[in-house]
Image (cartoon, rainbow, N blue to C red; front, side, top):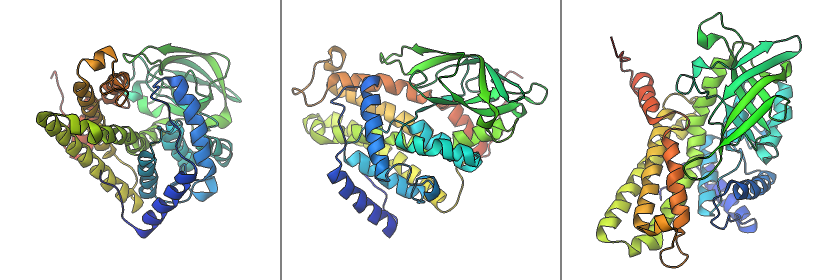
Length: 390
């Protein structure tokens, strides 16, 4: 696979991290895709990585990072793939909450939360989507009544990943209904152990219960848990999404890399000529997606702020990953449906099927492919907005 190698600093960091990983080998989940195993293994592994300074290397040094760029962050991600690392557990905190607090948070908020995000001592979830506000984020109706010492939050969020195991949630809520809808929003940090919060896990097609409905019933949030100013939530939420579509998407490419290594190994040798052509085609697409991400990361390393071009990364990765997962199941044949392995225990058929079912949601979560295409058309290509039904 292609890899990023653009500076002497990146090469030195790669060599240093490889040496560290030799002494601290990545743990294995044993092919178990369950959330319990992911939480148990992931929390311990991220804590170990953080103790060595290998989590959030693009964060400023004063907040526990190394003060490097997103290019060096990509190098770390590549080496984690090479070492067979499971995906990091605290991605929401590392790629969204952390950067937002560094840019917009108070000194007290930075001191309180950032170190625990790096070590995975505290896990975060994202309180944005609602039953009536998914693609149209400005339509959120969860309300936060302003009081003398804080806010009383009432409403419902949905599709909230890890809410039932998360310690904190960053919540976009409505603090005013008098202005334009996107101007009456605020951004709160909510303790998931607060009185009045109810979580209901939702069973997905893969059998996982990662998603949740979350209900807030007059949940008190202290005023020092407001990020930015009252009514500033839209600007901060957009900043969050820009990081999500660039940094989080790149981190998720670890999943594609792990699968590609499997497809390009013994499986490709056992495949037919037609199947090898399919593997080659999907590999080329995945490499193209990776190259585009590298280009964007290099731009950010040069000082550019993440912008709407992140929708390109999110769109192309999610669709490429889904295609790779589908191909892996296709290569298994009927074994994928019966959970019987091909060639003994070499390729866990159950894992391939689970990964494919999981991938179906990747083109929906964090903005559907249709929404990403609209963003690309209007905000990247500058095309006019189309009005239908007129």
